[in-house]
Image 1 (spheres, rainbow, N blue to C red):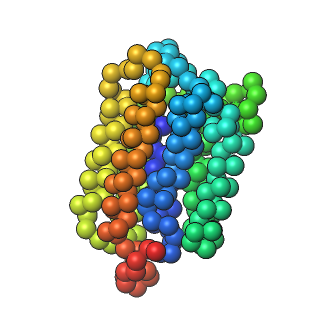
Image 2: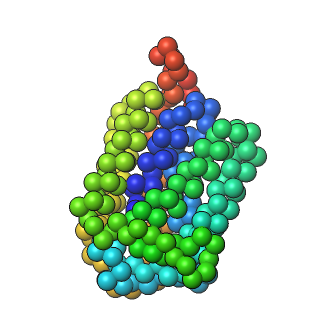
Image 3: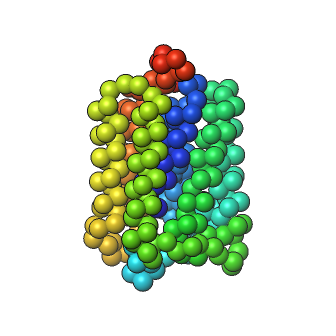
Length: 224
């Protein structure tokens, strides 16, 4: 799953007028993937290209205990909560950000083949929805669009920036699904993934700077 991970970010950003802005939740949504590709660059976690891994995604993610185990994800989520608490003194915002981080493992559990662990080790989990494109594609697009609509309804501001963000996310997803398969895993692939996350986060920052939270009664307030 790629853009589907941003669905919890949109929902979290729509919940509280004093929570972190959308870009922070976008970072939370892909935090463990930021970690994975950074670790892969230095050999701590590993993957390889395997065209037979799943129908939709040709990656064998065979060693990622520090980012994609349930325990590892929980540690990253706790770190995210603490950062928000320290920098913003915002309990609700911190908890929401932690929830968004944890949602990554749950969404991966649905789509990945069995390559996730609870705390490292040999026992792996994954329901393998990537082997069923006609189910995986509508699910990923559907939850993203639903969360995007919730965010738009709960906030006020120019509609242009969020629509551009949505188009960027959809373009990335189309490339991810239908673009040419990489010949091998390596630094170029890892940096490409990190660049995609950075671009998405940059557009989310732009959107967050132009959206305002709608309070009850229809009044708008900045979501800072």
